[in-house]
Image (cartoon, rainbow, N blue to C red; front, top):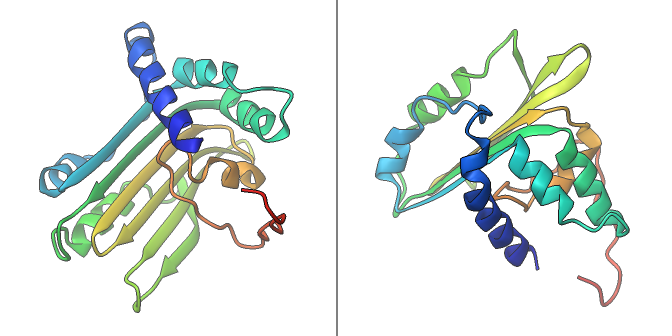
Length: 189
């Protein structure tokens, strides 16, 4: 079902793209094109405010999970996701990831989560941009030996809502500290 929703939103984004030209989608880091040229597979998702609102209109406000996602989308200005899958290890350098992270630095951006795994080679950074005491932007940089994902969400977002976006729009699931996983119900998906 999530895959069908993702495909529907992508088609909707293509359909509405011409109408949203006056709106500025999120700005992407400068070194992403260099990484895309080396990748075997590239996922490229760009949703501006109009597309997010239109996508939210297709969510059922009477179903709790869809109503929460609809509310979340209504407060966002854009979602940009770039995910690169490489054929083998070493096709991008740690310097590429450092250059990507360096474009989101203090005082504008604050790193709130940093995960480094020597064993699995997975590294994740989650950064927030604050405006008037409210989170106004979010960046996720997730690096694995053969995959690199960059996510930029522009707009007001409550940290407790972040898990709602994980696994949707090409955004990887990232567990936030202190957030417990809900108990699974027998027989449900």
